[in-house]
Image (cartoon, rainbow, N blue to C red; front, top):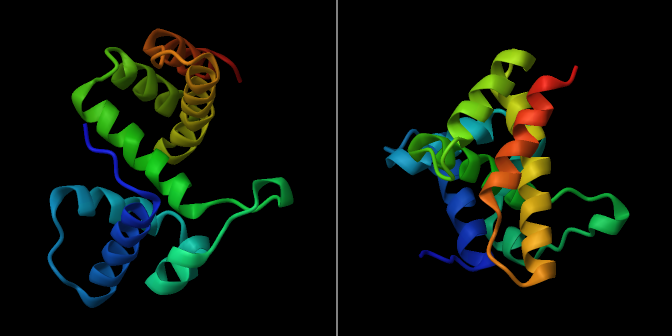
Length: 144
């Protein structure tokens, strides 16, 4: 399993941003990341300076959103859907996307479920529960 450090993640997104701006060729995963970067222009300044990105801390208690975590979650959900792991996530996100008429909105709602699953897993000291995660996404798809 690949477990990048915080610095690795930040360098990756800053590199993708720089390559996108300069028109350089992107790998498949970089293309997906660049598509989510394009959906979040409010974060572009965070990706423009890799050195500053490595140093910056985002205080959640003060209401600061960590753009690197946010885009990592978009990327994770995209990858999960591409391979349907956990099994059923693709269908759940597709249903949510259809109900919201927006892949972006569906991802944001799925992020709530993903974050909850990770938090509960860490708190309980056990593996993530994919079934609960998928059920959460499905619940989002059935409510208005």
